[in-house]
Image (cartoon, rainbow over all chains, first blue to last red; front, side):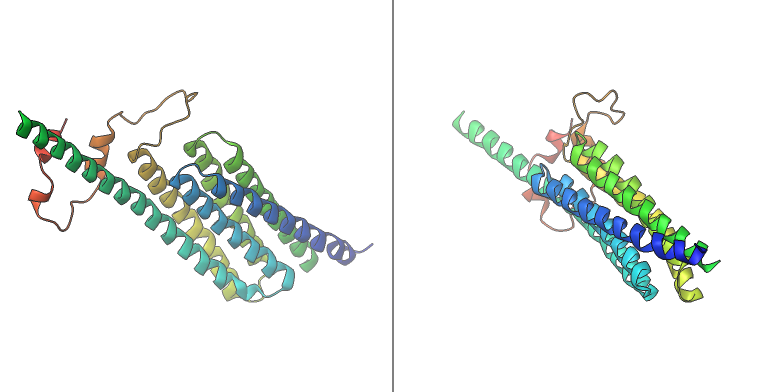
Length: 117
Length: 137
């Protein structure tokens, strides 16, 4: 058994096991996104899905030999990073809006109390 | 020699995939957002790094190999930034730690934290935000 035979035996097996593990990881993360419970948990799940997809693209590139797919992986990683940053800002701004609304409500209650008194 | 490199790349890709699976299990099983983030961000960057190094080993040209290594550097730079931003946003909006947590080193002043982190509101008349001074702790 030469080294080439060993490589032809090991490489497809390892790559297929890797793809199965990545598919299982996809399903588990989608379960977490489904369950929540908060928006930040879902954003974290989307971030992990992006890195899982980058891994998947890498494994498929190794399997098929089209290593030009590395450009797709870089682009997807960039988009995923920007999406996570934008979602984090969105969570903060959303909370600020809620806080301003509650302040306005409290002020309205105070004004109503002063008016009645 | 090319066969050794192929076997090495396949094992690296398998290790990266198993790291991703471990991160997914951690995200599903751990009790609160911050421990989940501990599993996801670290294992995510390590897994993508391993797969990209494997891709660089078997790349068809030098340019593709160098781009794969640049991608490793990019993921190592951006994964902590996005995790940090998300954790700060979650903490500032009141996501609490798991009750069995031992230590919370951030001060328990959610309104003060919000006031430091947010930029000033760009538009809107100041009369629209009544009693801003009186609300300050």
